[in-house]
Image (cartoon, rainbow, N blue to C red):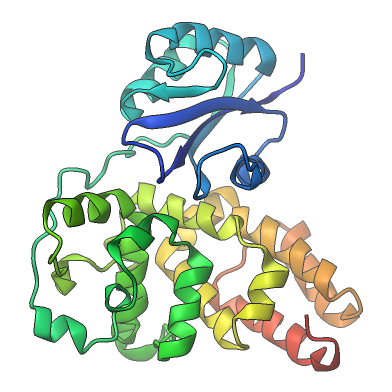
Length: 312
């Protein structure tokens, strides 16, 4: 039987501890998350991966996992389970220990889960052009990376990662914190409809973002429809926002899995196939084990600028 992955997926429109656990014959869950999100029979909102294991005999592995987790299955005809994430990961690892080729779940899944959101100063918050000044609490669950970039576009949020050590990025850093902790904010507004975040508590930087949240942000970037993103977010800010996210994720994670490198380079080449010289530069990165970092996004800036007449 072929190799494949057993993944755990989450949709924030679902109740807490409600996960889809399934298989894919691909070596990465990104495309499968897109398929789940676009499936009109599913819940509203988008699916994102909470981690996965690469296994041999993937069909048999899925069957074993579903049998082992039958006590938590919500509906016999669907692959949804009501179970704590850590418990689900432990069961999958134990059940498939003889078939696991590589483990991509990580060991810090529930970092920061015990943090209680503190209330901030309402007057100060409303003058900072922060995200929650422009959306209703019931819109948090459908928030995604592109939507945040639209707000950044309209309100001119800073994206220069060299500005005062990143201090100028505070609006994007706060928006990404909300994006990566949707459940916390949804629950907080259910408890207190007048809640206002405390800014210093609800911002991530590359120095303090937990590993699991950095991986989640990386996975959210992999779900972007790049053609639509470049069309709908103005140039060069669209690259700037990507750069802020990549800067926050950090080079360690990208060096380890090269996911954004493997995603962005082929996508840009597909969009701009006539940029021969620039494509050679990108292929040098792609085929020689190098990785993209925020500063290398300048290569894409040259690619777009040189194709202005054919802008997507």
